Amino acid sequence: MSKVVLITGGSSGIGKSIGEFLIGKDFIVYGTSRSPEKYKDSKFPILALDVKENLTISETVRTIIEKEGKLDIVINNAGAGITGPIEETPDEEIKNNFDTNFFGPIRVIKAVLPQMRKQNSGLIINVTSIAGYMGLPYRGVYSASKGALELLTEAFRMEIKDFNIKMTNVAPGDFATNIAAGRYHAPLLENSPYKKPYGDTLNLMNTHVDNGSDPDIMAKAIYKIINNPNLKVHYKVGEFLQKFSIVLKRILPDTVYEKMLMNHYKL
Image 1 (tube, rainbow, N blue to C red):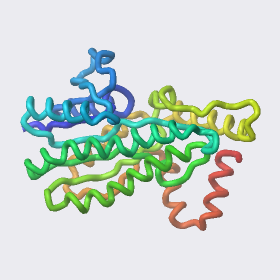
Image 2 (cartoon, rainbow, N blue to C red; image 1 turned 60 degrees about the horizontal axis):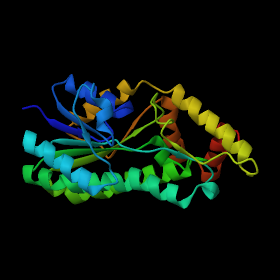
Image 3 (cartoon, rainbow, N blue to C red; image 1 turned 90 degrees about the vertical axis):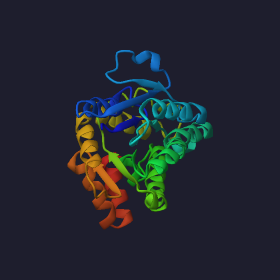
Image 4 (spheres, rainbow, N blue to C red; image 1 turned 60 degrees about the vertical axis):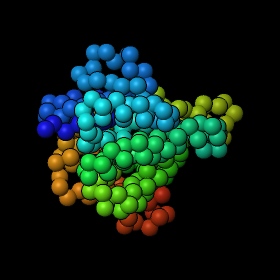
C-alpha cells in the first residue's frame, strides 16, 4: 500500500517540491496552508492548517485518517523567517517566530503520535536549518528557533522509540524559495546604530536565497531518508561550504569561528 504523507507548509517552496516528488513515487500526499483556497491547482490536496492553532491541526489530522485509515509520514516543514538586530526586534515578533518554528512542530507531533502509536509505526521529519547550528548575526531569533527544534528532536526520538516511531532532523541550507517574501524584517531605522551592518547583512542574506539551490535537491534527500531503515539523528542538505561550516564550528575555537562569521558578513 502507498504510504500516506502529511507535509505542513506544502503549498510552495521546499514543501511543494517534496510533495510533487513524492507523488511521483506513488506516495499519497497531503499538504497544508493557512489559505488553501489559493492553491486549487496543486498536484496534491492542500488542507487548511495553521501550526499556531491546535484546532486546525487536529481537524486536518482527523480528515486524513478518516479518508486514508492511517498516517505514515509527517514532514514538519512549515516555518517563518525573521531578521533584525535582536535589540530592535519586537518581543511579539520573537514570540511569533518561536510559535511557528518551534511550538508549531510540537503541536503537530502531539496530534499525530496517538495514531502512529496505534499503528505501531510512523516517521516524523522535522525541517530545521543549517542556521540552527550557529548564532548568525541579524538572524539570531531564527537560528535560536531552529536550533531549539534540533535539540527537541534529539530528546523526542528517545521517548518514542518504544512505539516504533522514528524521528529525524533535516537542516537545509539556502534554497531558491519565496521565504524572504514572507519573512519578518525588523525595519531599517534611520537613527539605528545597526543601520549599516544590518542593511548590508540583509542584502547578503537575500542574495544567498536568490542564488540558492534547487528545492528538488531537498525533495530527493527527503525521499532517501524515508527509505533509509537506519536513520541518523541529523541530516544536512545544501552547498558543501554551508554544511562544512557546521564541521568548522565543532573543531575551531569559538572566537576563531566567530571571527570567520564576521568576516563572511563583513562586520
